[in-house]
Length: 314
Image (cartoon, rainbow, N blue to C red; front, side, top):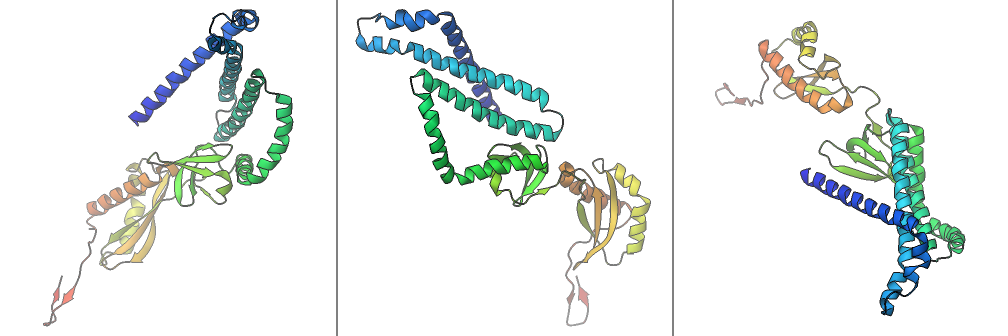
């Protein structure tokens, strides 16, 4: 985690340095426009032809950096606007991330076209040819188009939002981002899974309703089940106080199964989905302690062996 933070910090610092450099070059390019395009750089200032050729490229280099700086500035401003508009509910955040992804693609495409125009490329012919190329590429990139369309429908349907806890193909995690092509999930171990939007055909959203974790606790066969049920009913509120993450419960649900060495009782409680596994662990500990406080032991596996003399040996 510390290594990731250092890497992120290093990238941020490098980004700020490049942005500052682009800003300085862009401002100087606007201030000294005449000198750059028709002055010193175009008058063969050195006796070396190679250097003169390099210097003659300065107007195009400056123009390219100006185009990129404008693109970065627009992206930064749009990012600030999105943070103001698309905040609050999870649905707004989800829509904001998707719209932001599409906006980034559009702005960078425009920036690339602007840079090509600075270097003398016939942008009109390029755009006209792009229509035919798009058709050809589109036929070969149907999966990509399917991912984009599926991502739009995921957001519009409102059944999957950033922050939701979902189960996709047996993998449980929080929705980190719904992008233009992929959806990212992060689990409790901070592992990130990236799913193509078109492959998300079936999923379980576990965040829309409260969850109900169940635990099984065994008691000896000789114990009176009715007595245990009444004991839990009388102390339900006290047990809830010992389980701060439980919203309602715990509830005695009855006999779950008859084991080899115990009668297995089932207990359940309502909680938030993000607390599901912790509530299960807390319930096991609290119920075990409560049973022991009331003289009810938790049985362990036993084997009864009948000897030749008819006596039983444990």
